[in-house]
Length: 161
Image (cartoon, rainbow, N blue to C red; front, side, top):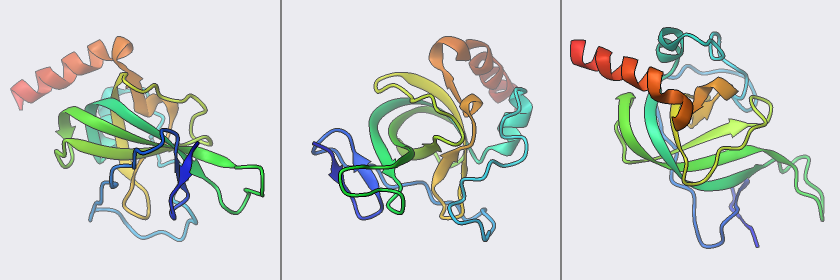
């Protein structure tokens, strides 16, 4: 059975709590209600555009998946899910704070594809208005099987820079 937290995050695996989100002091204040509005260029396919637009770029392994519940739309017997909160272990961080454990969100309005527990992804995340890491498109999480060319370019630029 899923356990609900006060923030509206529901843990799909009983007994596992989400990792605290990533706070950033570089975010600007906004009057948007949830900070879920995509940022300019967030869906861009170019590595350089995605890298520049993101505040956090890392290769991660998904450790936990938790439902992000919309309390306003939920009713007794029906839970409205607005997305997922992912707990992950960072394998390598190219940009942003190099925490071993990270948490990030991806709303269903940004992408309806759910990431898989135990799978590895290259992620491009930015903070929402609350300082929580957010993925703003499907392209912001690249599966390991498709990430090899991007990872090679990141590693190459790391050696040159």
